[in-house]
Image (cartoon, rainbow, N blue to C red):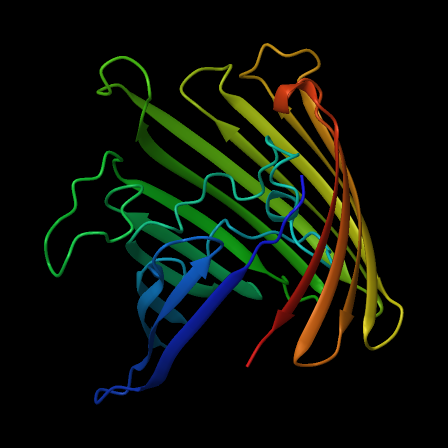
Length: 291
């Protein structure tokens, strides 16, 4: 498979202080990926209010959430750079960050503890003005800690969420409860960094279980050049394939010129019966600019 991909995103934000002394920030994003016929406006829409060590965020995508990890990488995560090959890999543990909701973040223990609540899982604010949107998902919540525990160079995180979603069987009225967990840690030594992450996803049945484990390491050869290696393994209990493991090994390199960056990533995937039973090799070359 060969071809080009593209992503264009414009972020708009403003911050300041309200008349009562509370700090605020607000913003939104316009994004167009690939061959989208219209610009997405449902990403990064938020209003955040901060008083002391507490922040309340209304919106989507901007509060701390489980779309995070501590794996040391140079280039794209596997789900982005090798989406066609690694069909089972997941690092986000079905996070609810893409749904509109309310989050409370409290600074604690060298980091932050965030409770995120959404009234309807999957509601990205598609309704106009103040109208309610009829979304199939029910309420969901997410609890996440991420920080350094007061240790310079250390990053640790642990989170869990619980969400109800409509199953795609029967007449569509059945619901499935999904409980997901994620945790990991990483350490930056200066020129070198290493980190790992684990996601565990559970459905309403014991067979609806999937676990991804990943580890990565990077080394800064110079101020501009960084190289990295990584390995991920995903075990999926919901499939009858034997073996039920998907393994990905990857190497990456990045070149930073300041305003423009270049990345190269090579992914070697053993599908273990997934993705039509085909093992894949993927080479991703990426150029980016910020202004």
